[in-house]
Image (cartoon, rainbow, N blue to C red; front, side, top):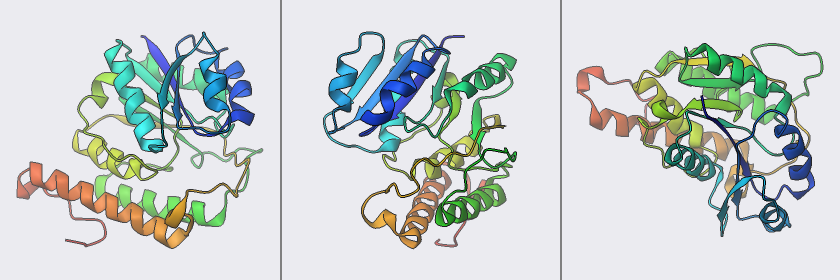
Length: 248
Protein backbone atom coordinates (compact mmCIF):
# COMPACT_ATOMS: atom_id res chain seq x y z
CA UNK A 1 0.00 0.00 0.00
CA UNK A 2 1.26 3.47 -0.92
CA UNK A 3 0.23 5.85 1.85
CA UNK A 4 0.37 9.65 1.66
CA UNK A 5 0.23 11.75 4.82
CA UNK A 6 -1.50 15.04 3.97
CA UNK A 7 -1.43 18.02 6.32
CA UNK A 8 -3.49 21.19 5.71
CA UNK A 9 -1.65 24.25 7.03
CA UNK A 10 -2.75 27.82 7.62
CA UNK A 11 -0.49 30.15 9.62
CA UNK A 12 1.14 27.36 11.65
CA UNK A 13 4.75 28.58 11.64
CA UNK A 14 5.16 27.98 15.38
CA UNK A 15 4.06 24.34 15.05
CA UNK A 16 4.95 23.11 11.57
CA UNK A 17 8.65 22.35 12.01
CA UNK A 18 8.08 20.32 15.17
CA UNK A 19 5.08 18.47 13.71
CA UNK A 20 6.97 17.57 10.53
CA UNK A 21 9.92 16.22 12.53
CA UNK A 22 7.56 13.80 14.27
CA UNK A 23 5.53 12.87 11.19
CA UNK A 24 8.66 11.96 9.26
CA UNK A 25 9.37 9.18 11.76
CA UNK A 26 6.26 7.37 10.51
CA UNK A 27 5.95 8.14 6.80
CA UNK A 28 8.12 8.93 3.81
CA UNK A 29 5.47 10.52 1.61
CA UNK A 30 4.25 13.78 3.13
CA UNK A 31 2.16 16.48 1.47
CA UNK A 32 1.60 19.91 2.99
CA UNK A 33 -1.27 22.01 1.67
CA UNK A 34 -0.51 25.61 2.59
CA UNK A 35 -3.80 27.49 2.51
CA UNK A 36 -2.54 31.02 1.92
CA UNK A 37 -0.43 31.41 5.06
CA UNK A 38 0.96 34.88 5.78
CA UNK A 39 3.04 34.21 8.92
CA UNK A 40 6.17 32.74 7.32
CA UNK A 41 4.79 29.20 7.01
CA UNK A 42 4.81 29.39 3.19
CA UNK A 43 8.44 30.49 3.03
CA UNK A 44 9.53 27.80 5.48
CA UNK A 45 7.75 25.02 3.59
CA UNK A 46 9.14 26.24 0.26
CA UNK A 47 12.66 25.88 1.68
CA UNK A 48 12.19 22.16 2.35
CA UNK A 49 13.11 19.61 -0.29
CA UNK A 50 11.93 16.56 1.66
CA UNK A 51 8.18 17.20 1.42
CA UNK A 52 5.58 17.69 -1.28
CA UNK A 53 3.79 21.03 -1.28
CA UNK A 54 0.59 22.54 -2.64
CA UNK A 55 0.36 26.31 -2.19
CA UNK A 56 -2.92 28.23 -2.29
CA UNK A 57 -2.19 31.88 -3.11
CA UNK A 58 -5.13 32.91 -0.90
CA UNK A 59 -7.01 31.19 1.90
CA UNK A 60 -9.50 28.80 0.30
CA UNK A 61 -10.62 26.84 3.35
CA UNK A 62 -9.90 23.67 5.29
CA UNK A 63 -12.22 21.54 3.19
CA UNK A 64 -10.61 22.70 -0.05
CA UNK A 65 -7.20 21.76 1.31
CA UNK A 66 -8.46 18.21 1.92
CA UNK A 67 -10.10 18.01 -1.50
CA UNK A 68 -6.87 19.11 -3.18
CA UNK A 69 -4.87 16.59 -1.15
CA UNK A 70 -7.14 13.73 -2.24
CA UNK A 71 -6.84 14.76 -5.89
CA UNK A 72 -3.04 15.09 -5.62
CA UNK A 73 -2.68 11.67 -4.07
CA UNK A 74 -5.03 10.03 -6.56
CA UNK A 75 -3.18 11.51 -9.54
CA UNK A 76 0.09 10.07 -8.24
CA UNK A 77 -1.08 6.56 -7.54
CA UNK A 78 -1.41 6.53 -3.77
CA UNK A 79 -3.72 3.93 -2.24
CA UNK A 80 -4.48 5.79 0.99
CA UNK A 81 -4.36 9.37 2.24
CA UNK A 82 -4.00 9.99 5.97
CA UNK A 83 -5.06 13.51 6.93
CA UNK A 84 -4.03 15.26 10.12
CA UNK A 85 -3.83 18.82 11.43
CA UNK A 86 -0.65 20.82 11.98
CA UNK A 87 -1.47 22.52 15.30
CA UNK A 88 -0.27 19.65 17.52
CA UNK A 89 -3.85 18.58 18.25
CA UNK A 90 -3.25 15.33 16.34
CA UNK A 91 -0.39 13.20 17.62
CA UNK A 92 1.88 11.77 14.89
CA UNK A 93 2.51 8.89 17.30
CA UNK A 94 -0.98 7.62 16.38
CA UNK A 95 -0.05 7.19 12.69
CA UNK A 96 0.97 3.54 13.27
CA UNK A 97 -2.56 2.88 14.58
CA UNK A 98 -3.96 4.07 11.26
CA UNK A 99 -1.38 2.03 9.37
CA UNK A 100 -2.43 -1.08 11.28
CA UNK A 101 -6.09 -0.46 10.42
CA UNK A 102 -5.14 0.13 6.77
CA UNK A 103 -3.23 -3.15 6.70
CA UNK A 104 -6.35 -5.01 7.86
CA UNK A 105 -7.90 -4.04 4.49
CA UNK A 106 -11.46 -4.05 5.86
CA UNK A 107 -12.33 -0.35 5.69
CA UNK A 108 -12.68 2.54 3.25
CA UNK A 109 -12.59 5.33 5.85
CA UNK A 110 -10.80 5.07 9.18
CA UNK A 111 -11.77 8.02 11.36
CA UNK A 112 -10.09 9.15 14.55
CA UNK A 113 -12.37 9.66 17.51
CA UNK A 114 -11.59 11.79 20.54
CA UNK A 115 -14.65 10.52 22.38
CA UNK A 116 -14.87 6.75 21.93
CA UNK A 117 -12.34 6.10 24.68
CA UNK A 118 -11.49 8.14 27.76
CA UNK A 119 -7.77 8.82 27.96
CA UNK A 120 -6.12 9.93 31.17
CA UNK A 121 -4.39 12.95 29.62
CA UNK A 122 -7.30 14.18 27.51
CA UNK A 123 -7.91 17.93 27.53
CA UNK A 124 -11.29 19.48 28.26
CA UNK A 125 -12.80 20.78 24.98
CA UNK A 126 -14.52 24.17 24.80
CA UNK A 127 -18.17 23.67 25.78
CA UNK A 128 -19.64 24.95 22.52
CA UNK A 129 -17.44 22.70 20.36
CA UNK A 130 -18.29 19.59 22.36
CA UNK A 131 -22.00 20.46 22.28
CA UNK A 132 -22.07 21.05 18.52
CA UNK A 133 -20.06 17.90 17.88
CA UNK A 134 -22.48 15.87 20.02
CA UNK A 135 -25.52 17.35 18.26
CA UNK A 136 -24.19 16.82 14.74
CA UNK A 137 -22.86 13.34 15.51
CA UNK A 138 -26.30 12.34 16.86
CA UNK A 139 -28.06 13.67 13.75
CA UNK A 140 -25.69 11.85 11.42
CA UNK A 141 -26.15 8.60 13.33
CA UNK A 142 -29.94 8.92 13.35
CA UNK A 143 -30.16 9.71 9.65
CA UNK A 144 -27.41 7.57 8.19
CA UNK A 145 -26.81 4.81 10.77
CA UNK A 146 -23.10 5.58 10.85
CA UNK A 147 -22.56 4.73 14.53
CA UNK A 148 -20.02 7.54 14.96
CA UNK A 149 -18.72 9.00 18.20
CA UNK A 150 -16.89 11.99 16.67
CA UNK A 151 -18.16 13.63 13.48
CA UNK A 152 -15.48 16.33 13.26
CA UNK A 153 -12.10 14.73 13.90
CA UNK A 154 -9.81 15.51 10.97
CA UNK A 155 -7.36 12.71 11.78
CA UNK A 156 -8.46 10.10 9.22
CA UNK A 157 -7.27 7.54 6.70
CA UNK A 158 -9.09 7.52 3.34
CA UNK A 159 -8.95 4.75 0.75
CA UNK A 160 -8.32 6.65 -2.48
CA UNK A 161 -10.39 4.34 -4.70
CA UNK A 162 -13.37 4.83 -2.37
CA UNK A 163 -12.96 8.61 -2.27
CA UNK A 164 -13.24 8.68 -6.07
CA UNK A 165 -16.92 7.79 -5.64
CA UNK A 166 -17.59 11.04 -3.76
CA UNK A 167 -18.26 14.50 -5.19
CA UNK A 168 -16.80 16.89 -2.65
CA UNK A 169 -16.82 20.66 -3.10
CA UNK A 170 -17.45 22.26 0.32
CA UNK A 171 -14.33 24.38 0.93
CA UNK A 172 -14.77 25.35 4.59
CA UNK A 173 -15.17 23.82 8.03
CA UNK A 174 -18.58 22.36 7.08
CA UNK A 175 -16.77 19.82 4.88
CA UNK A 176 -17.79 16.86 7.13
CA UNK A 177 -21.46 17.74 6.52
CA UNK A 178 -20.92 16.79 2.88
CA UNK A 179 -18.50 13.94 3.50
CA UNK A 180 -20.62 11.83 5.84
CA UNK A 181 -23.88 11.78 3.82
CA UNK A 182 -21.94 10.78 0.72
CA UNK A 183 -20.01 8.12 2.64
CA UNK A 184 -23.33 6.66 3.78
CA UNK A 185 -24.92 6.96 0.32
CA UNK A 186 -22.00 5.14 -1.30
CA UNK A 187 -22.03 2.51 1.47
CA UNK A 188 -18.38 2.97 2.31
CA UNK A 189 -17.05 0.84 5.13
CA UNK A 190 -16.29 3.04 8.14
CA UNK A 191 -14.58 2.43 11.45
CA UNK A 192 -13.27 4.68 14.22
CA UNK A 193 -10.08 4.37 16.25
CA UNK A 194 -9.36 6.31 19.44
CA UNK A 195 -7.11 9.36 19.39
CA UNK A 196 -6.25 11.74 22.19
CA UNK A 197 -8.36 14.84 22.79
CA UNK A 198 -6.00 17.83 22.67
CA UNK A 199 -6.84 21.54 22.71
CA UNK A 200 -3.63 23.58 22.74
CA UNK A 201 -5.47 26.81 22.01
CA UNK A 202 -9.20 26.73 22.88
CA UNK A 203 -9.51 30.39 21.80
CA UNK A 204 -8.74 29.69 18.13
CA UNK A 205 -11.27 31.18 15.75
CA UNK A 206 -13.31 29.71 12.94
CA UNK A 207 -13.60 33.16 11.37
CA UNK A 208 -16.44 35.63 10.81
CA UNK A 209 -19.96 34.55 11.70
CA UNK A 210 -18.83 31.00 12.47
CA UNK A 211 -17.20 32.19 15.69
CA UNK A 212 -20.73 32.36 17.10
CA UNK A 213 -21.76 28.82 18.12
CA UNK A 214 -25.39 29.30 17.06
CA UNK A 215 -24.39 30.53 13.62
CA UNK A 216 -21.90 27.70 13.29
CA UNK A 217 -24.47 25.02 14.12
CA UNK A 218 -27.01 26.54 11.73
CA UNK A 219 -24.41 26.66 8.97
CA UNK A 220 -23.55 23.01 9.49
CA UNK A 221 -27.23 22.04 9.34
CA UNK A 222 -27.78 24.10 6.18
CA UNK A 223 -24.88 22.37 4.44
CA UNK A 224 -26.09 18.97 5.64
CA UNK A 225 -29.61 19.61 4.35
CA UNK A 226 -28.31 20.89 1.02
CA UNK A 227 -26.20 17.78 0.62
CA UNK A 228 -29.15 15.53 1.39
CA UNK A 229 -31.25 17.38 -1.20
CA UNK A 230 -28.50 16.82 -3.74
CA UNK A 231 -28.43 13.11 -2.95
CA UNK A 232 -32.22 12.94 -3.12
CA UNK A 233 -32.15 14.39 -6.61
CA UNK A 234 -29.91 11.56 -7.78
CA UNK A 235 -31.86 8.60 -6.40
CA UNK A 236 -35.39 7.27 -6.55
CA UNK A 237 -37.80 8.96 -4.16
CA UNK A 238 -38.49 5.58 -2.56
CA UNK A 239 -34.92 5.52 -1.25
CA UNK A 240 -35.00 9.02 0.14
CA UNK A 241 -33.56 9.72 3.60
CA UNK A 242 -35.56 12.45 5.42
CA UNK A 243 -33.79 15.78 5.75
CA UNK A 244 -32.33 15.92 9.30
CA UNK A 245 -33.73 19.34 10.19
CA UNK A 246 -37.03 19.18 8.27
CA UNK A 247 -36.06 22.00 5.94
CA UNK A 248 -37.77 20.33 2.98
